[in-house]
Image (cartoon, rainbow, N blue to C red):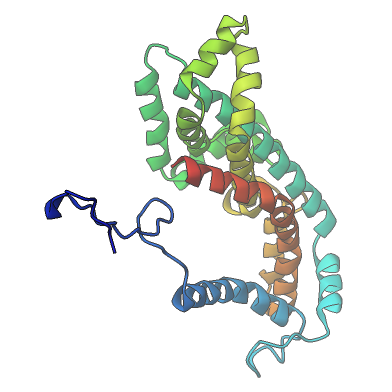
Length: 298
């Protein structure tokens, strides 16, 4: 009980206030409960099951594909994978996909970081209008530009070559917008001014100030760009020949006949997915750190 000093009035006695446990600045202690963990587990199982189902079907035969619920894998995956390697130019297509995806990823990350830094921290005439124009290009469907783009590639004599797949996607409007939005909040203007006072020019300021700060966003953009380039199917199918395909277009040859063996098709799909899984596992720590850093700044 509170102690009242001698001679103090009843109204002057201060009563201690109960303390609230603050977590995360909301004033309320929030802990994930059974429902949260249950929803997360259901989401993980729901997203992982299609890949597991593909592996189960790929490890069986086409005759047993619909007999039982696909939960237990069979023992024919290696045999089906060997048939995939014999049916299509797998190693050529794999090398082409690695070359195309790697060059596109490096180019998109480099040019998007440069343009994003310019739009975020440099002051030049027409900056806002040019940024609006770049963002507006994302509203145009890619399919509308396929015919004129193919005509241009044919006039240049690039059809059938990997350059026809790489050149049109060396930079993306989404990458520029993504890097601009990230760099606006992560780099203080005072830090750039301090670099200029120390005698650094624009290029040195970019590499010593912007690049270290943008590294988490560059990792995220690079990961998703590589994934999009790896899984691209429509444009490589149009501009490349069957003798020089990427991996996704080569897999399309597995179901071009009258009779489709889905165990072979899904074995090829699993083989094509493995490089992406390895990439996500290798870069997962950088991806999570980038997401967490953005969440803390927000």
